[in-house]
Length: 113
Image 1 (cartoon, rainbow, N blue to C red):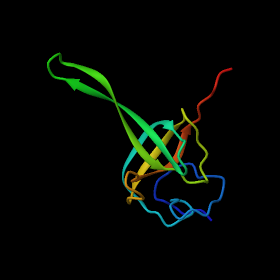
Image 2: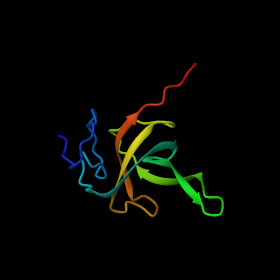
Image 3: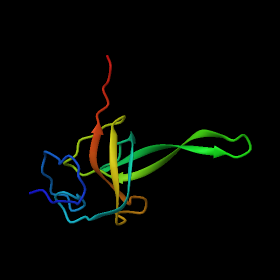
Image 4: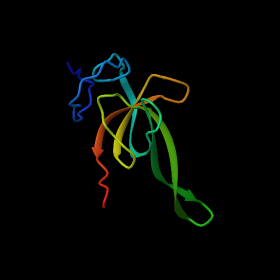
């Protein structure tokens, strides 16, 4: 059974038994939401999302591209890999560095052979 998290997203097709899943567990989602690219998914149940934003250089009155990395919990019911575009939402702190959870995969990365 899938819970309603209060945000219009594509629901995961798989079921999971993770307590930290916003769809099948008891984790509530609130606060900020970001869209970014998956930089790493090597850790168990966690990914690193890279967000790019413009940063103003006052002296030259121009912008440069800056990046920040956010650690997010990855529920087992959501499949993602490096290069995918995902939407993450803020939740309560799960560990020392993880305060976000993945709620949707927006675009899959297509590998060209």
